[in-house]
Every structure is written in C-alpha cells, then in structure tokens.
Amino acid sequence: MARAAIDEVAALSRTKTGPDGVPLAQQRRVQAVLGQAGARVDAAVALLLATLGKLDAAAAEGRPSTEAERGAVRGALPHAAETARAVLISMYELGGSTALYEWSRLGRLFRDGHAAAPPSCRRPTRSWPAAPHRHSRRRPYP
Image 1 (cartoon, helix red, strand yellow):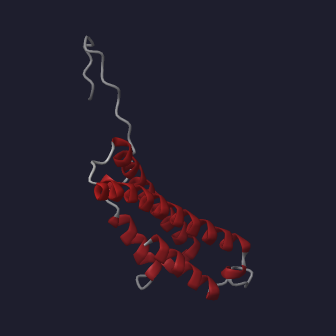
Image 2 (image 1 turned 90 degrees about the vertical axis):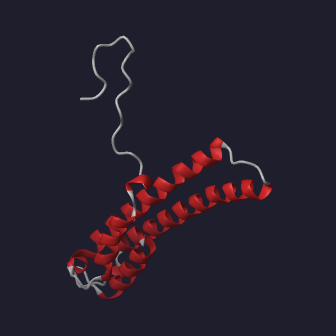
C-alpha cells in the first residue's frame, strides 16, 4: 500500500500545482519526499525478504531456525509496518486536500494502510514497568 501511495502521489504531482502555479512534480521538495519514501519502502522490503530468506534456507537445509534468525524476522516485521505507516502519512500530507475526498485513491490507501497493519506487527508503544523486587509490598501494576 505504501508503494501504491507513492505511485499515486507521483501521478498526482504531474497535474497538481502549488501556490506558485508550478506542478508539484517539478518542485525539489516534492521530488525529495517521493525519493526518500521510495528508498524507505525498498529498504524495508529488502530487509524483510533477507530475514525471511534465512528462515527459508534453514528449512531447506533441514535444520531448525536459530533464535537470531527468528529474532531478525520479529524485528523486520514491525520495521516494515512502521515504515509503511510513515510513508502513508507523508504521502497523505503531500497529496494535500486531494486525499480528503471520498473518491480519492490516496485517501483510501491511507485509511486501508492504517487499518491493515495489526498491532501484533508493530512495536509496542508502551514499555512495561520492571518487575518489583520480590520483597516489595508494592503491586507491580495499578
């Protein structure tokens, strides 16, 4: 969805103009945001595929995967989800008011992308308190 949002904004930027009347596609700031978003998505996909490839290799060799290999996948999954979410936000912002309309594909991608990533794929946003000392009278959680 993040890649589709980039493509949508790239197409939109050819016809949508800024306050100065210049198409967004000709503005360096827009080119930089699109380029960075594409690089971020490509890097997240490459990391995820590389870590999953190591699990595939372990299975092909008939050996169990290592903790490090499984941990790498558990790190790459939320990284990909967070990257996609950040890219969707930046594309939504770059698309401006166009994304607000019900008929807008960019708006639909933005909404669907936020709904699609389950919390299990994202990093915890809350850190849990440390366990109390076993002799402490305080309860660990309110």
